[in-house]
Picture 1: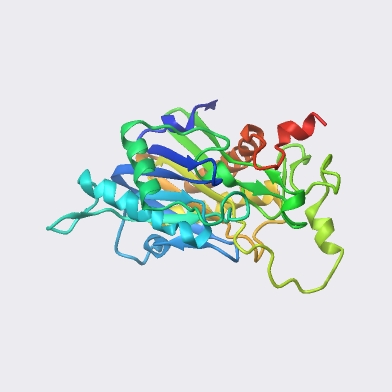
Picture 2: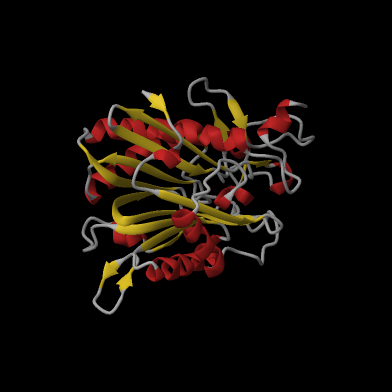
Length: 323
């Protein structure tokens, strides 16, 4: 098993754009021929568009793009720009008079980071889709949807940390599988192999880490609003051949990667979602792919923490290690 850049998985193209000043952006994954896809949503506050398409009972068997965006529900308009670009390129479901691109989207809550009134829109979605098709520019860190990502927000934004978007992919013979994850959780991030906390809730003096779970257990008082829509989002990409129902199961198994790496996770204040997509025809066992999916998700979470840079007054893990 060897590591490879997620952008080298054949059949998928990835483009990103961001507004650094506003602290938001979007990441678009495009499959020109259409990709089979499933989804598993476990957070209590998702901001999403067209995800019912991925229900195995729905007629559409493939989709053409996935958008991961900032801006919470306000940013869902980015998909309009992605659809516009793909229609111009004649990519989509043929309805006779035109081709309709099938685009799903999920967003993180980043409104408290930069400018809360600047969000991903159709223009930003268009540019990200154009980048994906014409000049793929995926990078880990403070790029695309990772621009405004933060973690460890239970004590408010004063004691949270900067994270970003991360990726990890491997190849086993002809099989390729990888994940892209934007880490924007309420909880803390742990190294899934060692159990060591690597990011999350800061101490009051912002020089060390503390446990969000222990912080929360300190009071049973009902909290009505915990920044609803923190949200960790992932896309698992494989060239193994699966249909929608199988991919929904693989996405569910990939959630184990969240559970190993983020504590607490799947809270009512998160919109945690994982997409799983098939872009090839390699024969592989569904359960083995599910196991690998959880592992690449955990590794991508670590990469999102490691590659993030301090921004908007929020320290990164790299900066914290220097204190």
